[in-house]
Image 1 (cartoon, rainbow, N blue to C red):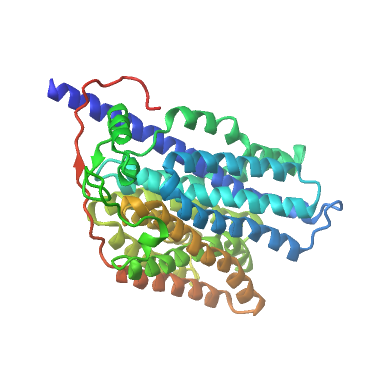
Image 2: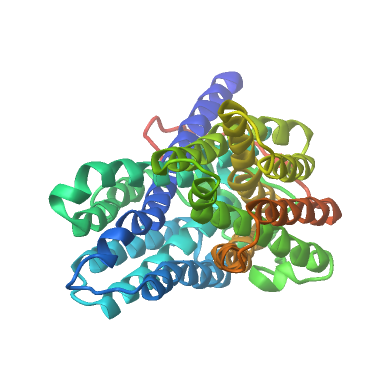
Length: 449
């Protein structure tokens, strides 16, 4: 009988985990879509006499969503560990969907810019919430894999934006592209309302033990032990950002911020400037854009592959390795090589930059205790966003300085090498990962609510 209940519980847990991963993945796909879609319409806006944008204005508008992401991620860190994973994710999906709708309707450059900033807030909050949520629903030994699947949604969304723009932009105009970005409000959000449960680990960390047991029975997800709250719930760990900068985490938190900043700097620098750099190296427009597709494709495939090693050998060691691979592969782009070799090194560079950032989110979401987990991912996404903002700016300054292309690549390789060193200095986390198995008296076959 106990064995039958255990099998039922494990089946429920797998089903719950798959729903959580699917919902977070689709959310990150639209996040990637919403961020990249602006790049697909910039040329149209620059040539639209009604908008009359200058390149400087277009660049500033592009940065507004990134600033919004920083605000949203840090705000999620402040409130996410207090309102819960479910509420944060639902609010984030609704927020960025409404933002895309407002952007689609914007009658002026000012309101369009405000819409981009507003959308970015929801995107940043979703990134922080998704990382913490997946860490608490993934089974032991698969946390980094589940995280890599979810955060692969970002580059997948970028590819989706490019493909949709090719089909939609010319015949229907740029506004329809932003309306498509608002679809989660009527598709993903209703599904999440039904299928996304609250995290039992978070409920335990808040001392809500009866609710935690009820959710655990319904979903098959076991209760944690030794992280944030004992059974009596007499004393809770410091939560939110206060927990990040407590004695045992303070040094690591600072290093993690710079580690993420390095990963995001490389991610946005290469996504912005790689086609231009390869174009200056003599490739055609289509040829230079193909490098961008290979970069993101390498990130998707490479991060899924590397995540299996992260689960086996530890994410920190794998991140050091992928940062190092990025440094080597980017440096090799300075050589005169045949096209197939260049594409291979660009794909490895995608793993070492965009893919590394995926692994960083997985590492961070499993590094902190439950009471500070959302704040930890929010810190990595929020502080790290400073690197994301700096990446395109640094690339532009280097190009404006008329540096030889090889020195620009060597600069980016140096950033990757510095990221590897910073990661190696992060101390090991010290907190329990045990779980209390739940043997429910009655197991429902219904899907998790």
